[in-house]
Length: 345
Length: 136
Image (tube, rainbow over all chains, first blue to last red; front, top):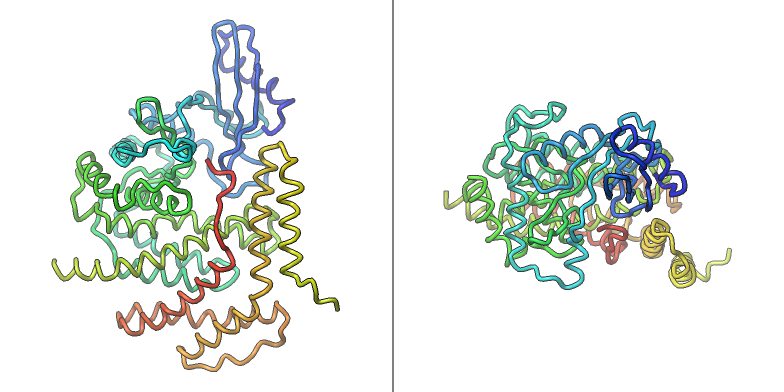
């Protein structure tokens, strides 16, 4: 997919098979896209006798070059399900399951002409009211009944088992690493000591951050990149968003935005004030990143063992270091608040 | 051996040349992203090589004091030996912080947490500022 000389012919042949009624298919432009660390991305402008299309290809990197291993078939099914149920996300069009046409296992989705939220924000675009739109976007898929979701998504037994498993993931990550990681042990112990109230488990995005948001002309967010979707605690997405925003602003859930966000999110999901509030958002700022932390550390460990030579494996360790400072600060700030809340109950 | 320019000086010099002399000539976007990553990693390394042996010794002494145990000494000052010694004493810190939370004793928690904060401070100093090149 990174070969712009080869891809137009491959795409044209693939589309001819997928859309037999299209005549005179021509890929008039193809460009390799950046924007993510995990998948190959390409954009194709396609012209045919019946019209024009702009499509985005998301494919697996060659063996040994993938930072994280995720399932394109699951991603395809999740995107199809959420877009069929009103979630704003570019729709899936095709899936080259075996990779025989596109050179690698890849899904093809519609290109969105909406603005990158990060680009919009960094160019000084107004952030007013976007905390509310963020609540709308999150609630749009957190409200979907679990029964509607693809069967290949694992269903946890119950919230307590699930959250205990997520907390233990910090310990398992430390166990699996190439050296002892006391900061991860600290985080696990702290999270265990301060568990929040239970909520129903839902579809979670798993990588909900500003870089995966597009801003449509009507002011609503579109959500990209569902490869890490799973069933979990919906507050993980909220906390994860805030965690990444500490590295890559803007933070729509800062002191000015978090209350409005929580109000709107509770209104849309039916959760109560004990379940969703600035303190639980901060708790999940820590817990919500464990999957990413594990994957990033696995990359660093593999590099250390000479099992990979990916520069990104080294580079991404800085995100873990940055996160460590955030987790420690947040845990210290939350402790007296949690103690006061416990005393008031 | 020639000890000057020091390793950290050379590394930061290489990073500067890549940034100023190579990066402006790159037009391929994935290559620009890779160069941004290399620049940050080299800047991290320049801080790390200058300080890591000293910082690991300091952390070990502080952990041993709280644990009330004798950490001994590394086999030599070679980096690999110091890293192994540091790793073995780090396990005392992991066990200490988990045990403190298990008892719920706030004074114990604070004592062990101070060591966690000291470790994090060194990691932050190595990282400097973080720029997620290539995102968005």
